[in-house]
Image (tube, rainbow over all chains, first blue to last red; front, side, top):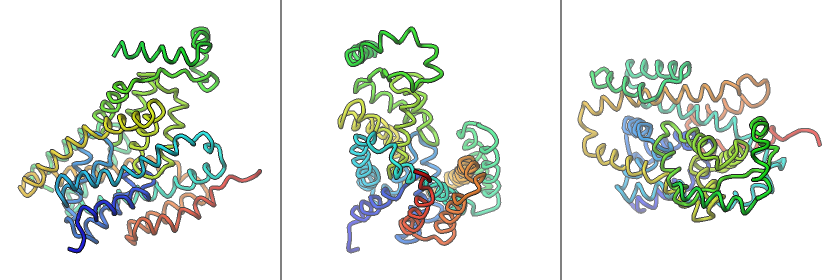
Length: 175
Length: 218
């Protein structure tokens, strides 16, 4: 290995954060592409497991990058990944917030925001697709995904109940 | 907590004594149109800021922003709904994780760089401790078949939940009869089907999408 894994993690998540328009969920396919296919850090199943764990824990969705970092390089990897994913964009947010009033009504600002909405929706849709493909390795898992999608779309049931049900089905050995 | 709030109220009074005196007389109509009033936020102290974001981080499953809104606008009165929407629009406009951006924007507004840092640590600290413990357990016991089955079930449900979320978000978009649905579909195909790198898809689509969204007239 000609480069330290920490450096790789750092550079990768810095670049990713700058294109993560629409939040961490829009960046899932790129995380999957790099972690599973390009770098071979983990298997499809491990990636799906990590997304599941990040959804099981409270807090912002972005904490999945800490799980990926931890898997690659332990505690230091988790720290480096989260700092890279949040640091540069936080600094940007801090400085833009001071000048926001000056351009919040500017025409280019409105166009940029309106133009990025469909892009980020397409990206989040791609996240759902990539995750379903990684998680649904047999028909029972496919049924769980479809049933959850239907229940989640129609009702406002607490996700923890859905996760608990899915965990029981998994524990029974069907998945 | 109570002492801090008194101190915060006093500093708000120093900034805008006139609007403070006016407030009771026009409290009811203010509900209908909060934008018409000069905003009179109760300013949080740094420990309050930290506590609020810890609470938000620990109560939010599947994204923390709805909880942030409830806490900041409804419970604490630190921002009006209009101000919250503005700060939210800014954190969506910026690249990077939205909730993280929001913590920085909100914290900076009430406490400068220190406020931003405090809000950020409050939001990220507790979930990071929890997720690190999960990561340790996973590296150690992830190979156990039973645990693998349980996680596989949850992973399938988590994917389904994201499908539900995006279906709700995208429903209004696909009612539009213009360029927007096509952009979303192209972004989806590029990333999900073709598996092209995100920067490539983004840089290929965003300029067109922004140009198409440019407001007409004037």
